[in-house]
Length: 128
Image 1: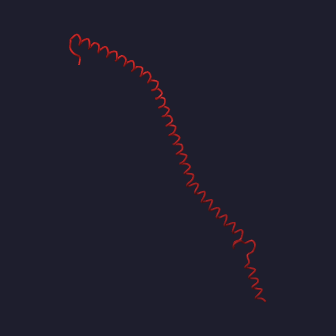
Image 2: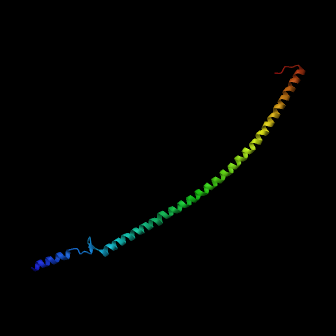
Image 3: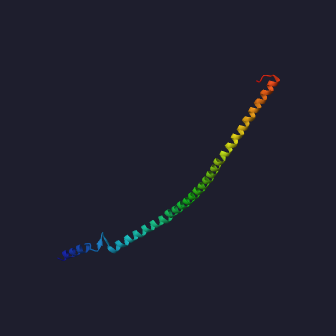
């Protein structure tokens, strides 16, 4: 009987009490979860500080440089547009001046042709 009592006692002692889970007490499981959470938070924080923040800084710098170059490009395009508009306004005056000069040259050429014809007629030579 004493042997059966010892066996029964051993069986009862080996039985997992209700405040244990997978061989660990609830306090031990809470400590394990806390350690895993702390290590995970540390890794996430390290990744954020070492990788993400510098990348954001680089992206902001690149965006600022791109904005500056875009502004400079817009300014140069505006200056070029003003020059082209000035050329368009000036072109009408230049064309009128050239047209007048061409008309004057045509008159001079016609007069010279007439003078040459008159000279050849006086001298009696043939015009070639």
